[in-house]
Length: 279
Image (cartoon, rainbow, N blue to C red):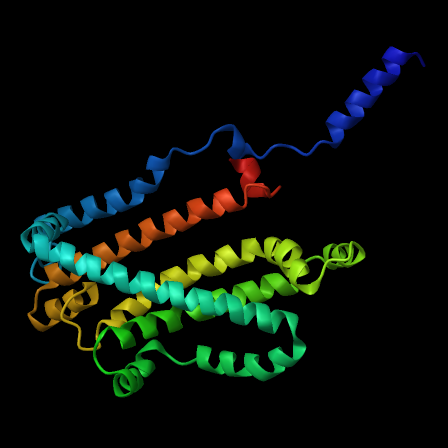
């Protein structure tokens, strides 16, 4: 067989062995596609309320909810700012403690035997069960609210990072040991980078739970915040205020998750994963 024939045969073999590119890579969906379902849902509810199918005094039309948001004016910005500060503080504290705890438990079997059973038991305690205890211990200022949000953010980050550390490829660890890396260097240069995907998954779940725990936190003698708006709307029989607060919680939760997802993509750009191929 001559050289040209061998080259042609080799190229055919490589082409047949190369994995097919997923269809999604050829045409990336437009970002506006994510707005289609929410907009259609709002239009459908607007039509149902205007036609009398849904009672307006129980389920206000989306246009009425938007009007309520404008009527709240500068007070609404204050409620949003307070809730954002509480979520940011609680999430930062809970996630930081979770990373430390996961590294300690993930790298030491004695620490796992000592700490993990307690963490698993506390994880099963409902958020509202913490409220009276935190009131007794910490009073009614900002401390119990931020503490409750930190509790909500702690466990998803802890569990996901612990799982990521435990599932790091053993060959990578052995390679680091061959190169004489110290325990600290092994954690910093191999274990933590390899477990970053799991960490970011935990951070995103923890952030969503932080928003959920916010509502329970703002039941603790709060006079400002989106959770307070929910309570105020219920007590004054204002479903428009309740739905406006729910809408704001959904939007803020989505925006904060999108920011974290963007940071995840930047930090994990080195991955050769399906998501990278999809674009």
